[in-house]
Length: 200
Image 1: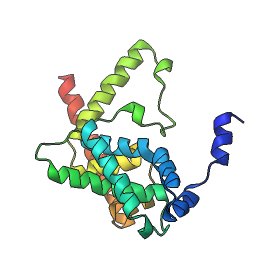
Image 2 (image 1 turned 90 degrees about the horizontal axis):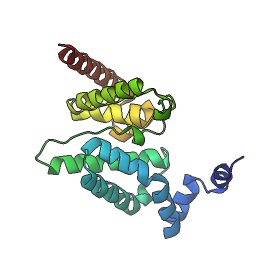
Image 3 (image 1 turned 45 degrees about the vertical axis):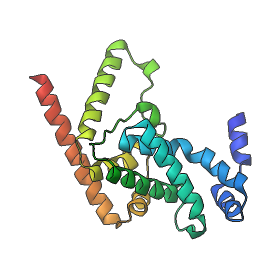
Image 4 (image 1 turned 90 degrees about the vertical axis):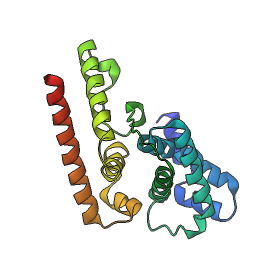
């Protein structure tokens, strides 16, 4: 067993940290922030495509989480609850902006995807193809509606379950499945259209 695994086993779980945070232990909440700050920032950045806005959203999300922690009843995991707060902060930020928002999916921000190819394992030709595909995917995602973009980010980038997405978006499970199906179809259509244009 490696040192990281030993540390992880010895670390308190989220439920205990939430309980201690509710009791006024600031150190416990700071530990929760350390655990989730990268994921929360990544979600915000992937949605708004701007580092400064993403930082503001992440900060707002943690402030709101701290202020409303007493309302967290454990009906979902703490991380799912935090995602929901972050999504609301993203939507608030979008409403404040008049310009069109950009979405950039950085492969470095997708650590949970087990089937992601490591660049060191790719040949130069495969690396070029991978980068071209990534760029095409980014452009197609940017062209989707905000609803489609968000549900794809939550499912495909962050790996949330249908139930977790349902909680985050505050909509029924069947609605999530329909939205995700339509989002995938829309993305597939855009990808095919772009490839046809590039092939001409």
